[in-house]
Length: 259
Image (cartoon, rainbow, N blue to C red; front, side, top):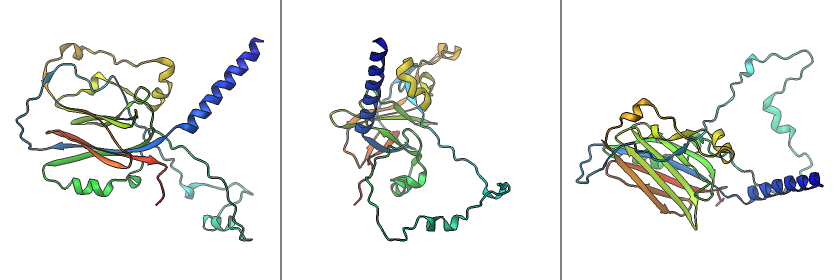
């Protein structure tokens, strides 16, 4: 009898997982960080010690393309070589019949960097980069599920002079939480997760950074911090402003609606 209930439990878990995947909404996120050069301001900025943007930050996966050189492939005896110029002709319907198949939704590969040629804001970014005393960098994009705030990680945007993270999540409405800092290395106090680590996080709990001797000798440092959260609408471009740093964020529905 216990075995029977085990089968029921497994079946129920799989059913719920399939159902949740079908109900999941996905978005395409595109971001770029910026630094304002030679900007004077009357604002005073705090001196902080041991500051961190977030406890855990997900580093987007970088896709690796397989390196295949077709010219170096040697065919064994009797093996057929395919001429790719004629592949399309193989699939031509000679009878002219059109088969209508039900369209199935294919979820995107999430938290993986998208090729720059598929970015939405390339033209906009080029125009913005021409503004005087503005340094625009770390232009990147990825797909992700639009989940609640608790289940959505902060994503690493930049880790150089300016360090920025962003979280796009669903509350009553879609929202963006943007954080940036410049002045000191604040990422040393955060755990930078890989995509694989994030996938198993529900099973193992939170990650923690290991303290070093340098952490014990922290001194107060002036730091410029951007920390803003706002409600958004999809398919729009958003700018998070600060006298020294900033973040440009676009969030788009997936799949993209055809005009």
